[in-house]
Amino acid sequence: LGNGDDWGNQVPALVEGGHSVLLIDSRGRGRSSPGDAPLSYELMAAEVLAVMNTLGIEQAAIAGWSDGAIISLIAAMRYPDRVERAFAYAGNMDLSGARSEPLKTRAMDQSFARAMDDYARLSETPDQFQAMLAVMDRLMHAQPNYRAEDLSRIPRPVAIVQGEFDEFIRPEHAAYLAKTIPDA
Image (cartoon, rainbow, N blue to C red; front, top):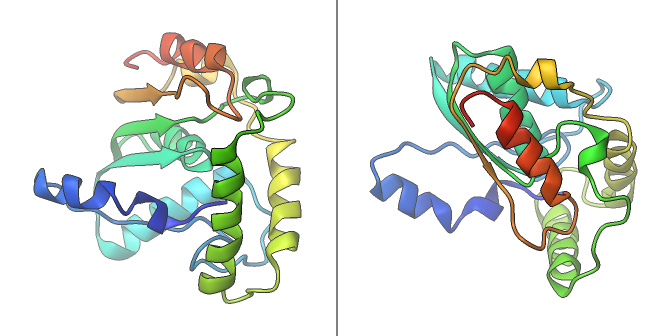
């Protein structure tokens, strides 16, 4: 439910490390419109490639958190000549990777409240947060659905990162991704 602003504290460190940084809001979040096409992770990965094409970026390292982690891994799988490497924080690549019930934490409550405030502040449809939430809920209960053989074909270096008390993703799934993706 987040947007590019969630990466604000990492951007200065990356720039100081000599990297150029581009933040992309996923479809329907932050400053990005929801569009008319049915939402899918494949579509959002293709849109990352479209942004790269528009800006003339031949190859990039892609970092993502949650949905962004899924998008980064799909991009590495589908567009390996364009993705140098991927950093996937708290993402799942099949439905078994998500907890059946998210852990209820104060941090999650704060994050959700911030997402609502950010949506109202940044979106071109500020009164549509609940509609966007319903679309995301349907997406997260239907996708992603990648098998081990799909993941084993990711030819780029990948960092799989998982917090010890992540509210949504099972720790065993992060271990599975790290074991299944060849250079993870």
